[in-house]
Image (tube, rainbow, N blue to C red; front, top):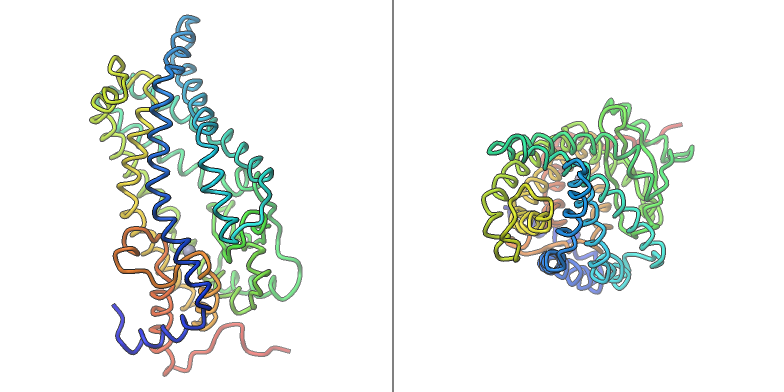
Length: 401
Ligand SMILES: [Zn+2]
């Protein structure tokens, strides 16, 4: 992919990373690949336990006896399942999402704080999923053979609503977002937003509450669009040039409608997934000991979840590949707008503690949702070589007043 010249040049940058940090990042990243497998097995085991306990079947029977509307039965069953799943997986998620992060020095969050946020997350996703599957089960009953198509469309609607509402309704549950205080960071970011005619709010959030990762993100759409920098960036000494490079990358995501693209792709995958779940349900239900149900029965929701988790695991390399393509495009947008490859590279190096910088090609293809830092540095250096002769200088760097 890269010529030997640029590979050697990239290696010079990567050599700046302390060996200890690289070894730790490698262990963290590769362990993370295994987590995908273990998490899948944990989900299967929990779904099986919930089926065996027959708690949902009994709940359904009781609700039906009270002649509750089928939609409400579906809502109640799915929500109860989500809460049960959350409780049963708590030992595992405490390790995977909290203990492990702390062990690698990537989080200082107290367990109580993590647990509180996990409860909030479980309640929100339980209610949201309950509503969604209320719709899906109605479609299974009414649209029969064509339900996967309709359910895919409903998933698209819910995803779009979540995309638009997230910065306003969802994210404030977990972090505090505020405009950058008046000063050089705010001015640099405002200039960049203006020169790229980016409508989004650009804010800083207390990301260090959960994680020390050097990171920023984009969320929302139109009026709710928001670019958020974690305060961990500043704790790691982000320079103004690095802020510009990183925010330029996030603006790229927005300008090139990457979130919309991902939502559209997920809608197609959801439709395909529902169709496969419809096909595979009878056999999976038989294996899990629920042979007497059809897919229209919400008591079979653990079977649906087990199938969905399996299909998601299989689709991960495909989703990752689309995401890597998008991420590289956002890097190139930043390079074209901010014109500061050195700043982008130094920002990338600051994320090397949680993403091993130079994985094998297979590992990157299967598991990386961002291109490896090595590939991203390659890309920045290629851009630099292409533009060096034209005398391009970084935007915002020239001395003013
Ligand atoms: Zn990105």
